[in-house]
Amino acid sequence: MSRVRYLIALASVTAVLLGACSQSAYEGSAGQVRKEMIVYAAASLKDAFTELGKEVEKQDSTVKVTFSFGASNLLERQIEQGAPADVFASAAMDVMDSAQAKGTLVEGTRRVFAGNSLVVIAPKGSTPIASLDAIADARYKHVAVASPGVPVRKYAEEALRKQGVWDRITDRMVFGENVRQVVDYVASGSADIGLVYSTDAQQFKGQVVTVLTVDQALYKPVTYPVAVIKSGRNRAGADTFMRVLASPRGTEILHNYGFPMPGH
Image (tube, one colour):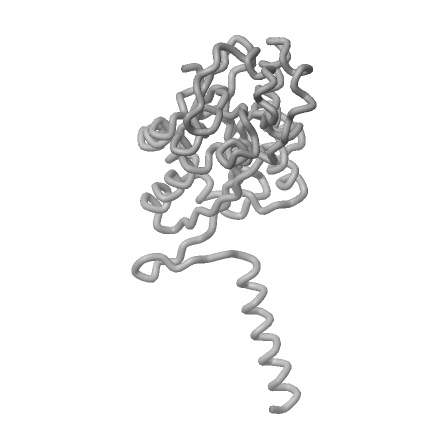
């Protein structure tokens, strides 16, 4: 191969590779090309949003929905640092407030789409407890809560402090990176008890049991805001996701996984 032909071939390969890196595309049924649309979402939304993503793809054959689930505060930080998110769904208003203050969100797209509640879980077969005060009992040697900054940790800490329990159990706490890891600690026996959202307890009811529903007067309402991200690469796909999320079908999916509408 001559040097000229080699350089032409190399340039062609490079162009193909650059094109593949600039935009992820997937082939759907009947050869339909689907463009990737990335959703960053709170870990507690994993099951509901996974089904919602399938519904989005069902309604729009041009979209391939992919997810990154984790602690809302960590996801917001990743987006701020340039992670390729098209949509962001948080488990706390203050995390979304932070994103909005930094100019990360597309103006006019932010809205609240769901609520949740706080519960105390224990390994399967455990008996109910009368109140949060019981967590201070010496039989609970390891109490699982989320790490600082994670929304469910904020709600749990607020409730425990108001009940006068927090300072009595700090030396027995084990920390999960997100709410699902807190569930895992309790389900595996690494923790004797833990504080999570009711939806997570519902999804893992074969492995853990809810021993107390925390009085909602002890913590701020749990609300989930969602918004489109300015730096996203698939605005059309993001708009479709937001539309399906707000539709009766989206509400039905959320309800099936235990998420009430805001204020209910």
